[in-house]
Image (cartoon, rainbow over all chains, first blue to last red; front, side, top):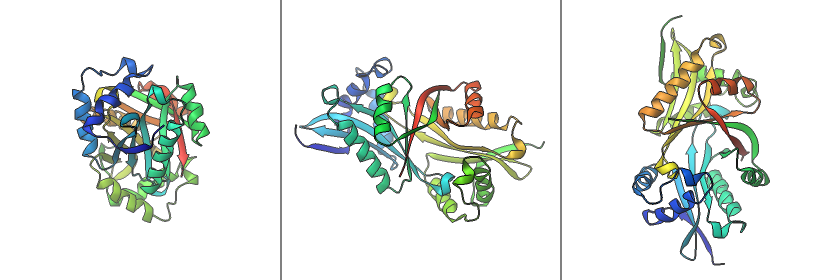
Length: 150
Length: 150
């Protein structure tokens, strides 16, 4: 396999990112890869916020992974800054290749570089494989994640 | 009880916010109310980020509650924007008064006003009372919350 590059996502990457978001048991029901308009508007919102880092992993000119890192200052834990990882997706062709580990390690290192003291994420209760994956990388399943749809 | 106001936190509120963060079984071990320096620096970071909303609930000139709302754009779920609630604290004198419900309802309404389609939060596995509270307010405990200390 060719070299891997992790870099900020651009407009040109959106179709491949959305295809990965939709190629997922949970994502299939809530994405619309045939209409990219809302995704392009969302990319504009992400790009204009310096605390947002939507990245893609690229190998041989193909987008093979993505995640979003958000840097969040706060008062608790002696004024700690934390990061939140969202929207981790690995292309079907690359699952089991270790790319997920590389992407999460990138996010942890970038969080450290940006002065974060804590990295957090939530994973759907149904994603048992993902839970084992995050525990292997040192994440503690210490919290319950609640969501409210508006 | 007097009227309640929910408004952005200022430098003058920091001692009362930190006292609430520390007056908590988990917070007692990780806060330093005798040294406000890191908290004041964190407030500067929060105030300079337009997607951060650290608020206090004030009754009769006393800070009786606080929470932090973060607005996070994203590509997943058809380009949904979500909000994250962190650092919810209610003064010991006000627990059981319904203030927690008022604060969370404020955060939900503010999220809606800012165009969010989803509100999320995590709560430590040890906070069973908080979990019942969030479920009563309509939040679904659908996710596992993972944390990695750096």
